[in-house]
Image (cartoon, rainbow, N blue to C red; front, side):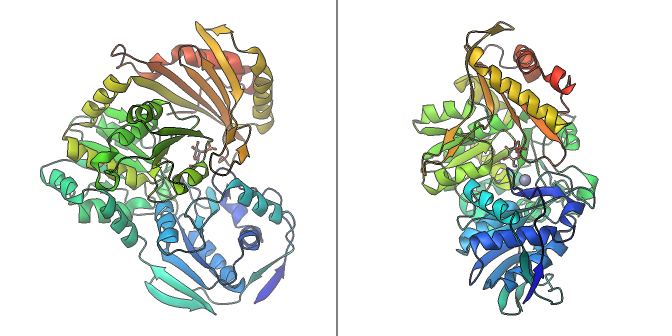
Amino acid sequence: MTTISTQPIAGQKPGTSGLRKKTPVFMGKHYLENFVQAIFDVVGAAGKTFVLGGDGRYFNDTAAQVILRMAAANGAARVIIGQGAILSTPAASHLIRLNKTDGGIIMSASHNPGGPNEDFGVKFNMSNGGPAPEGVTEAMYKRTTEIAQYHTLETADIDLSKIGRTAVRDMIVDVVDPVADYATLMESLFDFPAISAMFRGGFRMRMDSMCAVTGPYAVEILEKRLGAAAGTCVNATPLPDFGGMHPDPNPTWAKALMDEMFGANAPDFGAASDGDGDRNMVVGAGAYVSPSDSLAVLAANAHLAPGYKAGLKGIARSMPTSAAADRVAASLGIESYETPTGWKFFGNLLDAGRATICGEESFGTGSDHVREKDGLWAILLWLNILAARNQSVAAILAEHWAKFGRNYYSRHDFEAIASDKADAMMAALRGSLPGLPGKVLEGLTVQAADDFAYTDPVDGSVSKAQGVRILFADGSRIVLRLSGTGTEGATLRLYLERYAAGPDGLDLDPQAALAPVIRAAHALAQIESHTGRVAPDVIT
Ligand code: G1P
Ligand code: ZN
């Protein structure tokens, strides 16, 4: 073992999903090593088994070798690693659980672009397969501020290209097929015969993996196991720079898919997933499904899939996600939960058996089958529902809205704002909250305004200042918060919602339906005077 002296590097504070920085920062001297040592110092490595893998972005392979050496030097007994150091985030979560390991390290910056000058990230997941909770990530951060040394080995790189068992000194390294166990899990949850019969019957799909990690998973599951036509999966080879794509499955970044789905001769169903495979976007021929609606439709129809035929225990959504899923929970007579942004807040509810399905407005949906959101899982559940109902996506959405009403919804992102300006804006807004109830803006009366605080119903932990909520008397809602995943300045997220109960207005364009709410938000938060921004950079 070699022990290297080091010193703290400022800013190694994990955000919503682990530590994310520009790749050159991660490649800087001792940067990765310090953070990995902080992880091992907090969770302990001696005698333990970990899963390791990443989304294949630039620096993934080099970082994997660094982490393997450090795991061995810190006394880990075994590391299970995806071939080529590749694992989608949900597949990593599954392997952690399946092999009853002590946790795992995932190398990814999710949906952020990859490359020598783009983003990289490292995240620790616990033995339940889910992201480390705040108490643990805080401890890791604290450790980074005190670190004085890290442990490593002087060994050659280990060959990760071949499946099989090898070793780094005394530590066993199992190089596994990144896809096989995950595909088997999917097969246990969904009605593969019904979905493949639908494909044989001429059902056409487009799956866009955005040159990121789900390519091999999608080809194996959709084309090989389910018999979708060859070529259904596009951008299916993971590339270190994602082919220059921004692997974030939303209408802005998955524009080619949107154009195809809204063009002539559109396939029946389209889907895309992000860099590390935990996000998804689904779209029917001429019918975009917002993530909040997707969660609600999946929850309302999950019983059609074999893995959920016993029904759901509860539905959880992040606070900024629309209330559409709450209406489904109410009609099913099950609990609904509203949690802060970030998948880690679902972990306790899933572990305790209180929620079965969870979702976020940010193109994240998942269930208790793993402890991460899962893009291909959502896509397969949609396929299962389409096969069982034998209806189009548009028809399923229309029936859903007719039954439950429609929660018009949109998120506006204002990116790369100077952090001090964004902070000043949020501080002013927070300060104004007590005076807001009763105020009328754009014909909307403010009913309540607060800064969302969450008490975990399982362990009682409290998370404060999770985003400003302004609720109006007619059920409309504005939420503002600053992103915890950005790597450049601050990103303001403005979430907008309005509920329409009856069949009236079910077909409005969301931006048109939300126009008064949008104007009210700008007036309340004074976005322009604080940040100089008039219009968002990304609308989803
Ligand atoms: C964003 C999303 C959030 C998601 C996270 C990780 O975080 O808004 O829902 O859990 O990415 O995928 P944010 O940048 O808003 O903190
Ligand atoms: Zn992701």
